[in-house]
Structure formats: C-alpha cells, structure tokens
Length: 54
Ligand SMILES: [Zn+2]
Image (tube, rainbow, N blue to C red; front, side, top):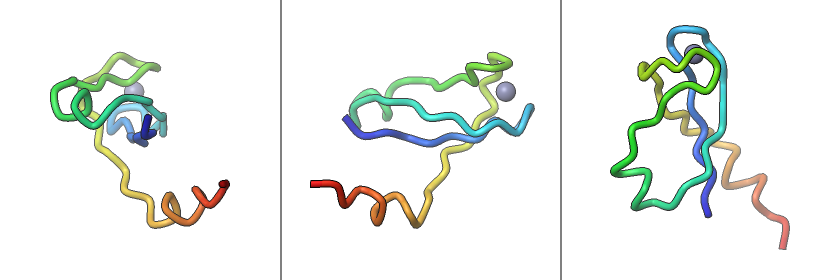
C-alpha cells in the first residue's frame, strides 16, 4: 500500500499514513499527535526516487 505523508498545520508534525488510494480518497486524516483534522498532504518530489528498492 502506498504511504502518504501529511503535515499537521497545527503542531507542524510530519506523519505518514499507510492506506489504499481508495481509502485516501474517502478517509479523513487526523494528526496522530494532536488529533487535529487540519492536515495537509505532502507531495515530496523525492518519494518517487527513494522507492527504487526492488
Ligand atoms: Zn497535530
């Protein structure tokens, strides 16, 4: 399953959520640290590069 990286706008923590694309579309992600829903998905330009483990 893909790993999605989010940043909490409230506590500024970066956290990763593992879920399917379908879940990602439906699920409301909350910050695991402060339980805040005000999170923003991070689109790291390095995520594609770092997945070169085959
Ligand atoms: Zn937070």
